Structure formats: C-alpha cells, structure tokens
Image 1 (tube, rainbow, N blue to C red):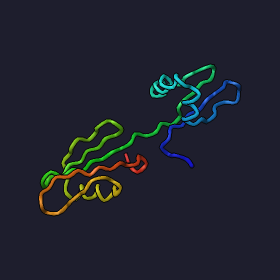
Image 2 (cartoon, one colour):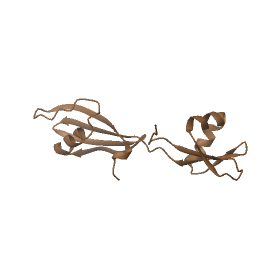
Image 3 (cartoon, rainbow, N blue to C red):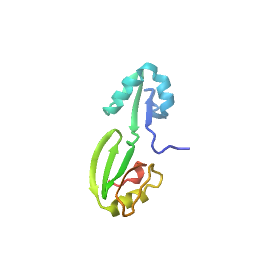
Image 4 (cartoon, one colour):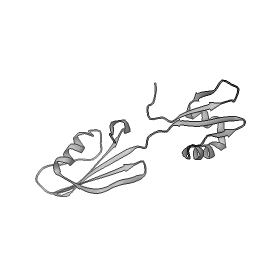
Length: 134
C-alpha cells in the first residue's frame, strides 16, 4: 500500500543503471549514523554520497497542518500550524466560518458549541495536506 505522505528517496550506484527508488526505512538502515547528516543535506535540496553510493530525496512529505477553532464568549478565532510553524494566529472569524471549519473537519478533538450562551472551548483538527487548496 502506497503512503501518499511519505518521503521518496532514490539511490545511484554509478554503475550505468541510473537512479533506483529506496524506502526511508531501508535508507536509514543503510546510512546508520550518517542519516542525520544526509537528512540535513536533503533538507537543503542536495544529494549525499556515502560509501560510493549517491542518495537523494525526490519528494518530501508535506508538513502536517493543524487547525484550531476557539470560542471565547461570543467571539470565534481561527489558528493554523504548518508543521511546527504557526502561520495564522488567533484570527477572528465569523460564527458561520467557525461552524464551517468544525463541520469540514469532523475527526477533530474538543467540543464545539454554537448555541447562544457565551462559553469557552477549543476544537483542534489535523488536516491532510492533499485536502488543502493553496
């Protein structure tokens, strides 16, 4: 079964047969203590050569996106994290937009109450990157 959110790596033995796909677990095992250095190189967009074999990452796992919808009294807020980076911080949103965010992410955690009485709550959901447009 293919995991659409997995990193994709390739190796090249420089034997004339070109690049071959290798899974991350096998690559980590092959590189052993050199894995951290290789991962740093991959993050810089570079390939790395270890013991006469060249490795490269050809597709990176997209960062996990986490949204939070909060209610404080009668006011609603939206926050979004891409990986560990907070890129939208407690932006005020309408009741309708808050309801839409909660309804579109039913697998979230927390209780979202949209009745007339003021209350305080937070609803958190992880969004699959392939579901997010732009």
